[in-house]
Image (cartoon, rainbow, N blue to C red; front, side):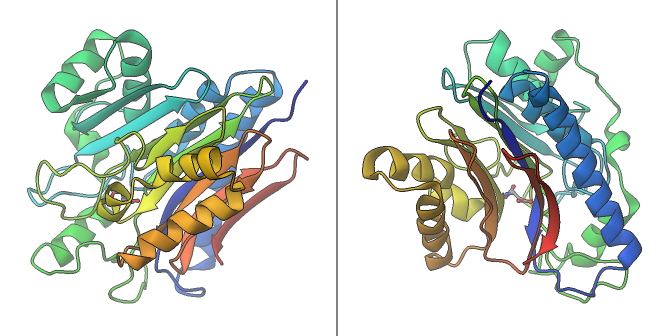
Length: 311
Ligand code: ASP
């Protein structure tokens, strides 16, 4: 049996230590841990990386703590508009959905696109119609509503500080992206990546971020690695970050640590902030971020578990 390992993120941000109550911080750690375990249980029984990343992401989508599925941020029209993508490094198959309002678990919608169509990305009403046809759980848009997120939107909708995080004694201007993602290596040597998000608070209606764009926020290739990004999506799209990391490894022979550092350097050079999680085909995990915080966790090839928020 080969090595297997998993890493997740619940979004980068500019939280500082001490600004979140210990109770709230524990809630984050517990949910990250539950998500990791959901994926790891699949891997430890010989399950596939694709199954593991979907299961881990679904746990975070169902939690209002993160900006994906339930608890997604609101766009400039005051509605939740979600994006998700999944990629299988074994055959480079990928699926994504964008701008959906009724699919309870967008990551499962993305997986259905990957496995049940010859397409990669379905958007908006078409994506919702397809998810329904596939028998996925469809909910009323009010299901995604979260009071704290709504207050965050109301407080920032007329400002140019779109991603500020309000509430819970958090200092003004604190940013929290909150997208979720997972990367995994299974014992057959296959890697997979999944990302799911409500996007950026107060984003322009119709805006699509990096998460559902294969190569930008999500990418997996057995030859190299799997990557899921979080942060200001526009910078990750412009730098084609997830694919860039894979390409640096494939064509230049860089290690995962070198490739992720190089890619994050390019994001910072353009003025972007955020982070990513990545795993190579040996199970090495790298989780760089240039913000002060990134909700993240991993269980490595030795079975050691970690969850963290700050540097
Ligand atoms: N990257 C996401 C987006 O731009 C936001 C996030 O990471 O929370 O849509």
